[in-house]
Length: 356
Image 1 (spheres, rainbow, N blue to C red):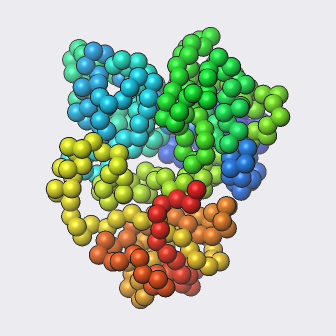
Image 2 (cartoon, rainbow, N blue to C red):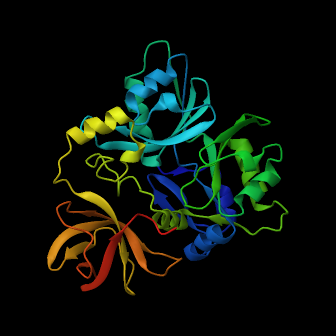
Image 3 (cartoon, rainbow, N blue to C red):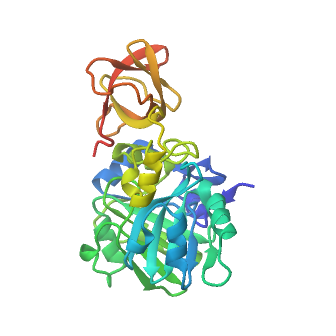
């Protein structure tokens, strides 16, 4: 059965084109992926991300219990802070990547990917202690909205005037009481631009969506779909689960060891296969068709990797993305690397991830 966001009718009214994403019928765009991408970079865009999971963990032992299973140092999280993390399998592969939000002492919100909700919830439920931790899966019953772009702070201030957004730093959050349920507001996002994510119940979420689009500010606010969400995250160098992260790829291979607690990082490195392929970011150096997942990369005539994500950057007009590459190949030589697109090779280079 295809799932629909609580905001589905709003998207229909706005003329959205839909796509199936992890079992959800979600907006792909509202007319132009390019225009929505540019809107985030120049003004502000709002995304319905209600397909993402919302799992609440609470109880006296919640912090220590989560510490045992998540890849980050949960005990280091202060109240009203968030952190990017992973749930790993026994071999160090990624079951899912997620954000963990500390709402209060021993109270957490975990936001996994739409495709990972069942895996994450089932994993945690099977390991739930009898009485010291409560686990509640509210995925699908809440509204989650991302407000992204250089004007996002002004828009948020217009809607939530009681919050001092200039004092709210990246990865910090506020929890306020709404007219039905609490509203979680975090300075997080998946676009590389400044932004916020809001989590609340269906009724409040619907009203907030309408308020964001009709704020009466001198700010252009655009509804945005998953198409621009993808091009924005590639420009920012952010991974996508199922592409740059899988159950057979460790965070070390993905170049994300920064987000691992020290003990786990040491353990994974001690067992790391030096010949295992790694995720690298590439830029195509000449005008070319869009790079797509599955396209092959070469060092001279030798195949060295395969694209995991790719697009034409709306900012630079050049092809960019991620590839899973042979770790035994040097990636810093000039004029040696190409990508095969439609039976033609185009030159590329490997670089640090992201262009913004």
